[in-house]
Image 1 (tube, rainbow, N blue to C red):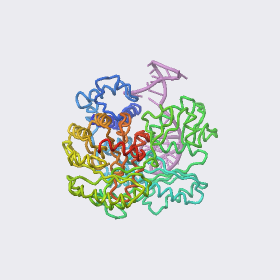
Image 2: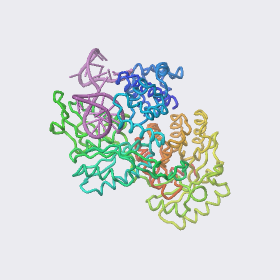
Image 3: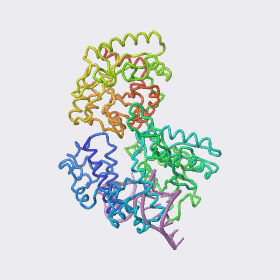
Image 4: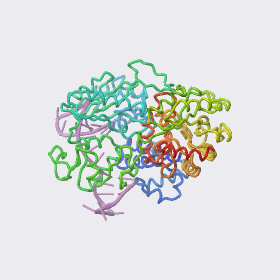
Length: 603
DNA sequence: GCCGTTTTCGGCCCGACTGTTTTCAGTCG
């Protein structure tokens, strides 16, 4: 998939460089849109560059960009990118990442004052010469200075599992505010994206001004960025617990505390659906909806779906025009002649072509946890505690899968200890009724694809989760061979966190996923969505590819601590983003069906 | 640069907020 990644990067950079050069915005957008189209694809586009029409068949890719992709495949680069890079230094491009600095401002700084990097920008703020530029007043400069400070903290996009509890806390807070009748979170969080840039909160309130005030004075607010009548933005201080990956080393200093932007919009009850639709995004999905509306002589905004009147001045809601639909998302989709699209699918990846709303997996469908650790390896739960936790959640099956012997730092079990563990599990089976306890292992897939126990042991276990842990920077060919060999082992049931990536921390291996999907289907192996919010591996686009390739999927919490069971929803969201139906996920099967499936590989 | 059950040329989504402005440009989502 490295071709896709390179193509996305180059096209996005072309778009940014054109922006700084002040070129046609539509041309810029076309490149950015093509990049997004490729980003959402589950298959490797490099293989399609031999067939130009296959490229231009992709929506958003026309003849010119197709040629650039072919050039990339043949030469490893794009000449247009190189030509632009001659004109635009890397420095100003980096400045675009600072919130509040857009292309116009960066261009001004660069062309008028020769500012090409953060240091140069700080220097002209320091000596006050930035104030000589047009539209640069004291306040504007203060905002830029604050934005630089934030950029230097580099909190980046926030993990889903960090943002969700914050959003729920804010929603709870707003629910308690007098006059507030409805509250929810929207944005990429509602769509279940693996990381979010900010948190969007939507409320209905009898007194919008008071609601805004209550929002901006929450105790966790460290800065107020905007305070309008219907819209407020704040930075909200975070207490991040990264659990067993707590290598951030952040101190508790309140000033330097990591924070996230939270936006509040106050809307009228009558336009709730339009606002929810609008603020849930994605931006690309919304653009598609508006284009579709225009074709039907309608216009869509956050207040509703209105009859279009090209002659009239001003927005329809300000003229008192009655909307065709506004109160619910469902009626807006219906009036546009579309089926309801679940939020997780709203990414402009073909969801508007659906002719019925797909039945996607839900948290309540999950009946088994098939990947869990105890104090025998690196878990913090004793066997009895793990079993109790699974039972509490209404699961019919819990699999104990401690690490295998090569995972030394994680307390991996020698064969001797693994055999001894069976005794403890048998005892637990005697003591606990109402749940099936499986004895399995999370077996290391070694760098060459060999498994960490021999076949006799693997066959003796009830379930085998095979996962890559070390050698995660090996090249894609070796990584592909490695996973294929594990999939072909006759006793492997699940490939755990197949790429080993940690979101925003390390990329993991990049095997040829199409080959992995095909082999997994052939050998009746499920590919795991590891539900921990730092992993979410398979990622959403991989799930989509695996579902299309008719693979089985497992959603597991990879339980190490009691709270890890609660990560299940993030795994399910990721599955939904991959268009995963319930019956393709082995964790939703009945105990009987699941046991029958496992027994095929474990005599 | 892409796209087309009105179009192969002429369009390309819409509104809030801010700051610097005397009516609007820039940014964001």
